[in-house]
Length: 153
Image (cartoon, rainbow, N blue to C red; front, top):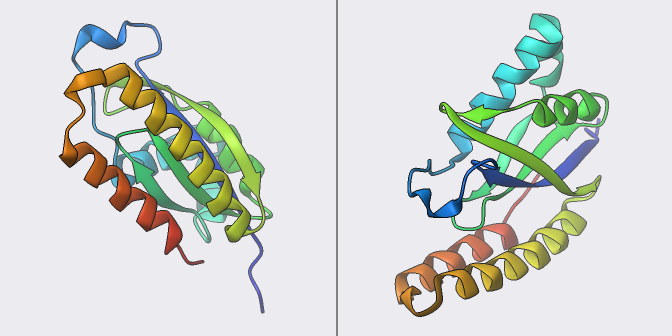
């Protein structure tokens, strides 16, 4: 039996109501993004909704530099997961907003879309940081791009 999944490429806007220069922020990880989404599913759809969604739900990838993540959900439950993601307002008491960049039923198409988004966001990051861009930042970004390439179901 083959499980049919949907993959969502999401962008996380950190603290959307404040200036980026404020300095206080949270580093997003697979763990805290996953917990925020699971909490939202529980609040909005109850225990049965959470149990139904957890079968295939997984945060496959998170990049804390560009705030892009890939989330997998079953074909039957992805709309519930997507709705819950839309209702997430904070990660660790830090305000966030999620934006869907791509939705696909195919991991290869998701990888392509995520790589395109990541490259564009990193160019934006380089312009924002300017001369302060370190070799370490570039190395970390290349590591994250390599992680997308090796994603499996």
